[in-house]
Image (cartoon, rainbow, N blue to C red; front, side):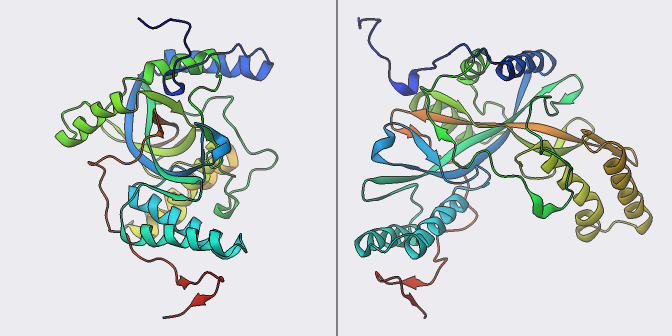
Length: 339
């Protein structure tokens, strides 16, 4: 039997540290209340992004993108572009540029989830989105969730800065008590319901063993519409509750009339309800119009972690398209070669 004092591997370590500052105490209180009011977890589905690990990072990986791609290939394409623009704009070293472009060439032709450039590893990272649900539906934002300071902008172009890009996936980093408890509770989260294809369920259960650790990413936010016996997400996950509110207002005033065959009187009623919402409850979390209920919801994301870092795509993760060339050919001098 191993000595119990021996240090456990990072991907099996959840380190909890008392956090006594006022903000942490209030945040922990919100987490406790949410766990009581919204005790169940519903999986929304996989999300993908990409990360890097430099030699000085040890076992840690830094996310270079949001975790908002719905398919692994979209994240590979994002990594492709990241490396191509790094080669074009961020180095004068010809040898480094050659290595960057070699990685780009692989990503153009192979559905690979990891490439290396010198001593730096780049990886497509898989996560799972989920939400908490209780008797009154999906969990809305918590009082301590981030909101933009000052006057609220309703311009879509004023999207908040991502809280996920730059996040360090470090399984052994110290966290607060409630975050530690949540992570323990989520260790067994898997796609178990019969509605999921057999291969999805099998891959999910396998991941519990290959990547037994769990890291929680910063919460994100979306809006959903209440249906007869479920809630249907309408937008992608966004950095703050207000970003989701702004998306909801834009959906009712602009997107829905443009994409769907909405009768003019209904479109006018939707737009009027959106304007009244902005004027009366700019930080409200529900909007009702014509018997329909839209709610701002809190979306959580987790990344599974194994001995070699965060999980990549699974065999059962679908891809809508193969790899392809996204950018012009570049030579080692940084010259763009036109076809």
